[in-house]
Amino acid sequence: MDLRQSKELYERACAMLPGGVNSPVRAFRGVGGTPIFFREGSGPFLTDVDGNRFIDLVGSWGPLILGHAHPAVVEAIERAARSGASYGAPHAGELELAELMRAAVPSLERVRMVSSGSEATTAAIRLARAATGRDLILKFDGCYHGAVDSLLVKAGSGVETLGLPDSPGVPGALAALTLTAPFNDLDYARDLFARKGDALAALIIEPVVGNMGVLPPKPGFLQGLRELCDRCGALFICDEVMTGFRVARGGAQERFGLRPDLSTFGKIIGGGLPVGAFGGRADLMSLIAPAGPVYQAGTLSGNPLATAAGIATLRELSHPGFYEHLESATARLTEAIARHAERLGIALCINRVGSMFTLFFCASAPHDAASARQADAKRFGRFFHELLAEGVYLPPSQFEAAFLSAAHRDETIDAIASAAARALERI
Ligand code: PLP
Image 1: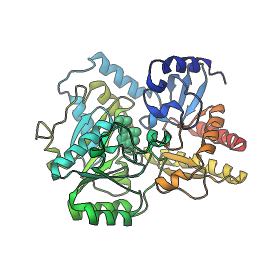
Image 2 (image 1 turned 90 degrees about the horizontal axis):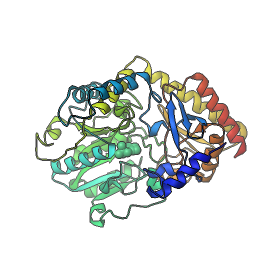
Image 3 (image 1 turned 180 degrees about the vertical axis):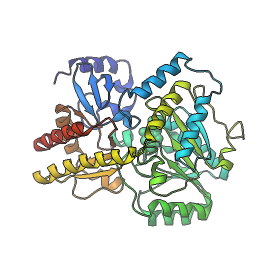
């Protein structure tokens, strides 16, 4: 495969952008090699600057549940752009998007739009601390909630890929306010709540971890945490930036029957444009400025282009059978890959929830960060490159989720499964 122009651009980029990229996990450090520069996305496909075409399983890390350049989303953005890119003042689109979100996610009694998932989690933590008058927060090992000072403690995603335990630059005194616990270990959480629960403002969790690779919650784990929070007055913040409108229309909280106090969103609700949101109980959200004293603001919050893309996306997702179809298509793909691995005698576990999944080369399915780290990441790297050579673009890291979109039709899924079979034979 000719990647000359990508390599040239990467060399130029390294002289200008730290590490040659604008977000670490794009840099291929987790799998080796150099990143590919793309020039176009269409449906399930990405075309790079050298003209190579790939079936895309990254979907911009989750937002593109309809695939690239979906006609309804493109039309909405074009129409919005003709009416002006930003007003810095209220408009109907931001309200409509919030109402569409609430219709799907009943716990969102009030919503504040922001411009990224990181902004949403930052504000949710601030609000939880203000509402409870407590400083401690609890997160789970391997969960990533954005490049947020308080939350860059045992974070997965790019932090895991680069092997950074935490980030320099986060003051120790701030990190000390963030407690951590293993995902899926309710006994550990019970013990921690018994000791620290009364000082805990909130826990924040990825209800399905996507940022250590996909780790599904064990039955009862999320409900058990909810009860622990209720007993000691800590808030439950459900980080649905990845799972929102992905694992069900009502997100993980619908799928697992959960009612969080606060939730954070991003990715899909922006249809590929920069959007985030947080929301939840009306009494808590009424503390947000200007309704209340907890400050939160943004020049481009509720941006007309971004909300138009989000509204167009969410409307498509409300078509009957959308999620059932997407989930069964994803299951068909992962089952086909698993069968090929079994035939070849390769130890492969595929964790999947809805249309998000991760391949782990190991004998038993990882259920927390520690077991995910046991998977053979070197073999994953070899598989990634063999699959890339077959024209399929997986997330370039063991510790990320792959995503299927509604644009991946049956013939595309068959093509991925056959490519995976050939790639597996070579690793
Ligand atoms: N929370 C989760 C669960 C995420 O997966 C991410 C990003 O991947 C974030 C928060 C941060 O969102 P953003 O990258 O839009 O700031």
